[in-house]
Length: 196
Image (cartoon, rainbow, N blue to C red; front, top):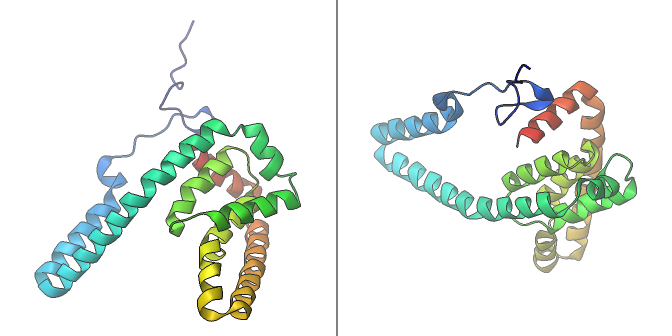
């Protein structure tokens, strides 16, 4: 009997063998950024130092935010059954899925890059593309602490008007992107999320 060589950790989506990405290619962005910082430091030491400090500060901020998000994602992946997530946020969830996407996104904390791993887990668990898009939009524009801050500092009328405009924008963008992408392109996005 022939052994299946595509099984195991090197198996990609659809049972296809996954290609190994060279280390330099995988970290090319970071290497290019480091090289640019070195060049900037050599050309203009003052600006190079400022850029290095800003890069270090951003990196430190990211390292303090990403681990708790990944911990919560692990818990979500283990504790929330796929069937439950499909029922509440899947393709047939209707208004319930939309409201849940807005609620989860609005209650979240942290910068937008923290939303991408959460969106990947939601896709892996069977959430519909529209609901994931709504979740991403809510994370970026309708956070509850931000709305409360706007009410206290800019007034209720401004805050609620901005919130209504943001929600309208989220729905318009979701509909446009959903219509523009083909079923194959969406399947490709879900396949990438499954690799996460």
